Image 1 (cartoon, rainbow, N blue to C red):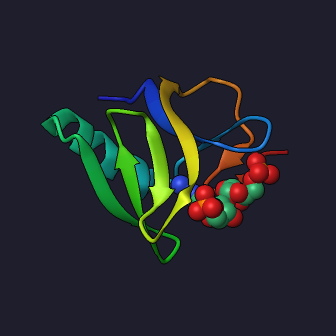
Image 2 (cartoon, rainbow, N blue to C red; image 1 turned 120 degrees about the vertical axis):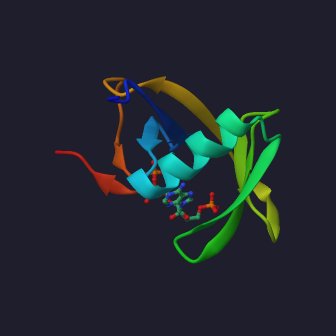
Image 3 (cartoon, rainbow, N blue to C red; image 1 turned 90 degrees about the vertical axis):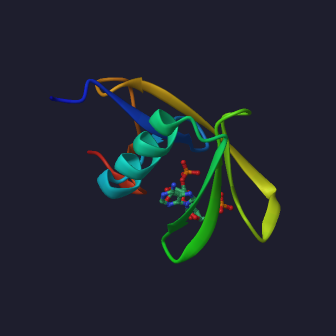
Length: 85
Ligand code: V3L
């Protein structure tokens, strides 16, 4: 089936869509009912915390970004740090 909703993480003034591989892993973990997922993102281990809807680096828990599950057409800055023009 074609996904109509995808996962986003918070940027400075808008939301970034996760890259597809990361999105798929988050999706599978959420559907399994996991409370949290540990996942490698651009070479760093991150926690996806489904209870609080945050992501943060495992060894740098100060930095916390909100996450959301929203329509694929929702306003966004880009995908995985790559800006849309
Ligand atoms: N996917 C890709 N890169 C990420 C992700 C992720 N899920 N999480 C963090 N980073 P932190 P503006 C973001 C990058 O949270 O202008 C954006 O993708 C993060 O990149 O302290 O603020 C943009 O590339 C940051 O470079 O672990 O909206 C960039 O910020 C670095 O990991 C600027 O976005 C540290 O983030």
